[in-house]
Length: 131
Image 1 (tube, rainbow, N blue to C red):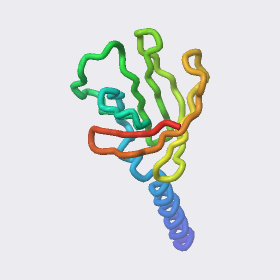
Image 2 (image 1 turned 120 degrees about the vertical axis):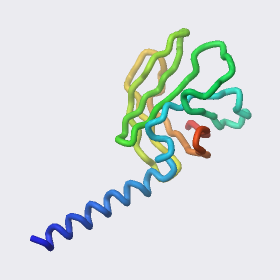
Image 3 (image 1 turned 60 degrees about the horizontal axis):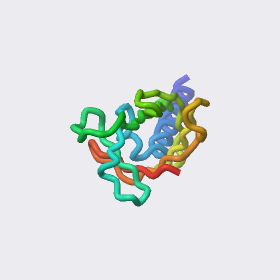
Image 4 (image 1 turned 90 degrees about the horizontal axis):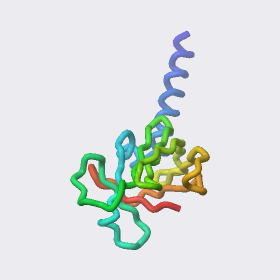
């Protein structure tokens, strides 16, 4: 009985450690709403996001935002017609720096699957490339 418990504990540790390696720095992104700060972008394809609550300058319309949950949930908030719309989806780690995003079919955006490549993440600033 003790041998079976020991093996179970070792396997549980291995699988949880393996999941941490896959997500890498994404752990700093989870469970925060990230709002796009296009004013800070340099035109090199890197999108800049700030945590919700940041004192953004006035913009012409609602800002794009997203939220990733550690359990694989994903939400994209867009404003196709001046009113925010939330599109649900899921994500899956693709190494330490990439996440495959899959959105539910919707009538607002045609492409429902893409990749986020993590460029940099600090406490309140996130930089990604969308592929």
